[in-house]
Length: 197
Image (cartoon, rainbow, N blue to C red; front, top):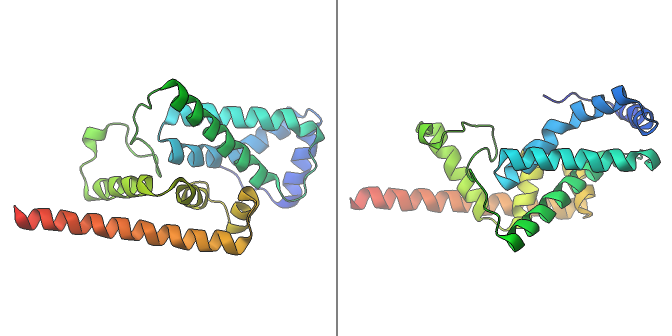
């Protein structure tokens, strides 16, 4: 699990890591790797790909850290790099028709890796939620995943997306409203199917 760093600790660790301190770099990775991985996994639904993109994200950060000066924008910068890496990979896969394996595995929570064993009410509800999230437009999915999978604050999301805070709050509200509607319509369809059988 990730560790929490104060602004001062992060600033000091970034300066040390920028000067080649491997222990400082490890602490930065320990603090953020899980959140970056969770965000990417929730978007791509593939743990191996999420791990690969997480590593690629931290490689990019490490390369650019020498000239980086912390001004309270490290987290949005980090998550923006991760999202860009994911978009690049998805475009590449689309161009080259690379299939995504285990699509429904690990989107929103770690969950089980055996889809046949997902039969409890909680697992069924989670599957419905995953499917409803996938039905949202990509921009709505981004907001939901950044907030709920990566645990980013609204301010961090606004910075990462380069949008005003009010716009992000409105987008989150609309995305959750759409999600609720999708979930409710799915339940109504199920109820109708049960009653007609």
